[in-house]
Every structure is written in C-alpha cells, then in structure tokens.
Image (tube, rainbow, N blue to C red):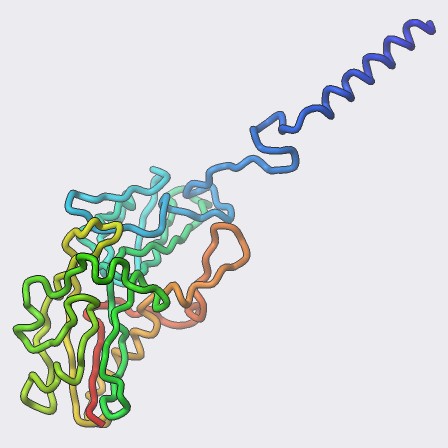
Length: 286
C-alpha cells in the first residue's frame, strides 16, 4: 500500500514538473497567457474589422486590383464618391479610383444575422483643402495634402517628383510649383485677367517618388475667384459646408482603444455628401 502511494505521488510530481517547464501554450506557439489570434473575416464580427489586408494603396503602372480578405457573399459600398469598387466582390480598382482621398468601405453580409463591417482605406495621392482663401490676409498659397493627412510632407520632394507634367494647368493660368505642387493663388488669379469668375477645370498630372514608383497620377483642379466673400454664390458656400462631412481625414480619425477599430470623429450625426472632387478652392481679393 505504501509503495503504491509512493508511486502515485512520484507520478504527480513528474507531471507538475513537466507542465512548469513549458513556456508555450499547448494550443498555439504564443507564450502562455497570450490568446491565439483568430483571423476575423466578414461575417465573423469581432473587433478587428479589417476588410482588406492594408489601408493604404498606391496607383501603379500595371493593373492594381485589391481583393477583400474574405470571399463571403454580401454587398460592398463606399463613400465619398470616387472609389472604383465592385459591389458584389469588394474588389477595388486602385488605378481607376480618385486618389488622395480616404474612403469608408462598408460590407453588408448576405447571411441573415451577419455582422456589417466597415474599414477606412486611402488611395495615395494629393488633394487641396476646400476653403476660402483671402489674398488680403496673406492666404495666397494652396498647399497639397498628401494621403488625406495634413501633417504629412510630400515624399521625395526635389527628387524626381513632377507636377503639371503635361502643362494643362499652366495653359489655363493655374500657377503650380513643379517641385512641391503648391498653387500660387494670387498669380493664378492675375493670370485670368478678370476679377470675378473661375478657371477651367483641368487635370493636374503628376508623379510622386513614393510607393507608386512614380506612376502617373492625377487630380482635377478648378479655382473660383471673387472680389469679396459676399460675392460667392450660395451653391459654392453650400458645397463648402457639405465637404466638411465629405472629406475623411486621418487628422479626424481617432483610435477607439480597441485593436483594429477606427472611429471617425464628429461624423455620427452629420449627413455625408457624395462628391469630393474637384477640391473647392475659392479665392477672394479682400
């Protein structure tokens, strides 16, 4: 009886020793205490609501189609207007999308009871702020915004970046710096020869020394100009107000504290306008 009890105690001690010597979870290669990572695809729900493998995409010389992480049946939609996305598959044609913008993509599963997911994606490029520029206050330069983030500087400035490659902006009197895409608004207005009106809408063709590998990119540009703010027509002031809830910006995105989840600050109760292009650049003399 005593021998039997001894062997039982010895077996228990050996088991305890073996379990303590392990520093890995028996279910994963993660350290003990680290929960196994389970990929979250559309329909699974959870906090990591990533529809795509990344959130930043660049135009390329070759075809550039981005597919969702999951092939689950459902429908996809996006806002603002400009993202070339297939409703049924969620595939994004980067090269045919409006660049320099952040888009909200929503996936609605076909399965009853499935979870609707949202992700924010950026198609790399430049944009300009929608605002009224007052020349008398020294507000005479429109500075490009890179990748929907006003805090970013253009990559590779002075290193093979090209703006207004085909001279379309220059032909209509829009004065753009070929190195950094800054628009000289005062000179652009003087080039028009009149004090009230608008330039033609033209394509600003450019190449950036970034992840696009200097693939041809473009942005439609148009400048409105008036003597005073009182002369600005109502449809343009309405457009400026709409753009406040149209243009998503990384500066407005704040972390919710949950891994993989992004919340757009201040947009929960505002109507989202549809069209985000061309940027609404309005210049007044005084």
